[in-house]
Image 1 (cartoon, rainbow, N blue to C red):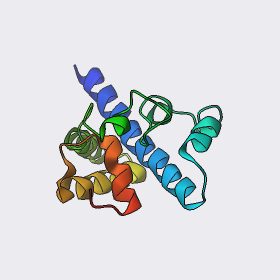
Image 2 (cartoon, rainbow, N blue to C red):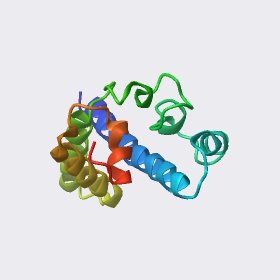
Image 3 (tube, rainbow, N blue to C red):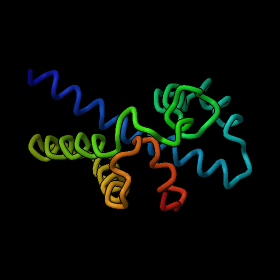
Length: 134
């Protein structure tokens, strides 16, 4: 079904972009001396609230069921996120849509996958954003 596929591609583009945003915020919070829990408590109850934060938090602790608490064993592997982001960019190009954040997310997940992380959860991109090679 074309509408279903279009919705999936668009939804997963949002997910890829939002996970990177949430992960970047946690990396910045770490550098600023703010605890993971403190950022979670504020952002999860204010305008930063989103699924990537409240259900799939990329740091261990605040959301016990998130892959971050299982050393990023995948619920949704980084390779699958990259596949869907590539599909979103192909669709955007074909439709004449401008998606600069989708394009950037695709590039970041491509680099993350190329470093050998295709099989870990897509939320593990936080380690890439920290500059860690794991």
